[in-house]
Length: 369
Picture 1 (cartoon, rainbow, N blue to C red):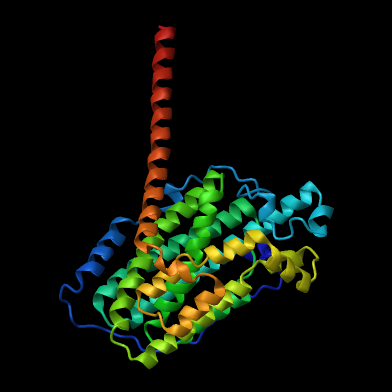
Picture 2: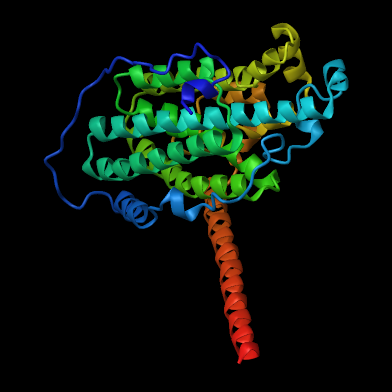
């Protein structure tokens, strides 16, 4: 079935062109480069994997309850709209919410792939080009996986959120080579990582847990790359140049906090836009979710050296300033460990099944003899 047929909006335009700006930069300096980045590049090569094989696509998914989402997580829970819904309609709502979330993940991953390719083209240092090339492949794999999950297991896609598209467009249209790092790897991917982690740690469904755990293992390297490259570069900028980037971060954070709420889902169920926005604003679950979305962004922004008074005040206003003291390295190490533990548990179970099959075959052969 064509992707166009799966979109909730039948008039969805399937192409989007962003005019290219900036310069393609070559480096004829082929020395060893920065050891930290080259080590990350080596790790990126070592950790490549095949989404068609590592993920168990035979696992069943109930489209009406793909993530095991509790009622309280639905933004209209406790309202008259929720009370009027039948069990089947509530299941359909869960399907739409999952489709909306994973569709934004899919569109974001394609954006990350394009941004990583742009970094290969525009970053001046060869070691950064090397690593960005491995990240481009990672993001292609993530887009492939999310697309397959939506096509085969959910059967529905949502268009890219207007505000996510606007932030992605601003990131790509900027001619400064560091902006794809800042817009994509710090803001958009930082937000996505927090969303991935919240679902990964709460879902009881094995297939989405696998997908999110393995994608987050890759993303831990990507965030580390962005931090290294930007931290080095931003030490060289003037106060005025740093303020320009802080303004970009502030605008992007407010945009994501206030506009990425899944209101499109509620309007598809006939709820007027104004009431849909009010439901999303009042939802205690979504209030917590919006705060947690910045758990990866705030410490990263602080770490790379963007921590002026105006930016700090913006985070105070959002109620997320304290997250600047979070240990980002520890969070990323946990992402690695969770994926490796999941692999170990899966392969141990498969090995146990193979041993049991062999033992059964031996016992059966002995009985026949």
